[in-house]
Length: 153
Image (tube, rainbow, N blue to C red; front, side, top):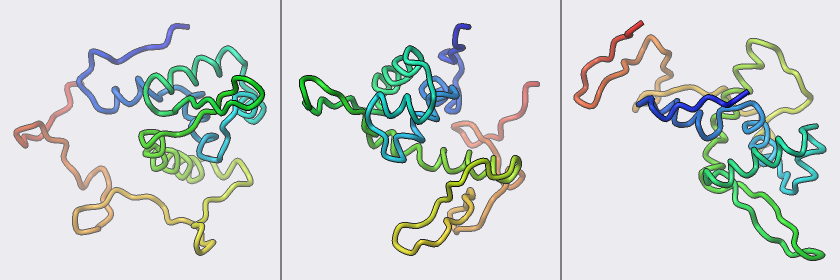
């Protein structure tokens, strides 16, 4: 199956999906956030086929989400490390996790806690400039001139 691309859509979400919008890519990113760096460790932890992992790692490197670093152990050996762009996906991964835990239940033994206190992290929320939690009914999607966008469907 050929992966759908969204190059022709003028949409930030579509642009993000072009870079990280398939199942394996987000799981690779989550695994990198856990500290996985070597190809074999990604493969073992995710149970992903070599060819698929090779493709996803290459795509994430090409898109600047991961950096491929020669660590030079025993000849040529590479590690994959999150870039600033990759680390900025932390909020996305946590949001997906919290959404899934709410609607599907916790599917693993992992919890997210603050390193310094050991306390569970708070649920993510979109907030106003004043810090108030906002839902989808509390915001407007507007164009560059500030006019509300309307659904075309």
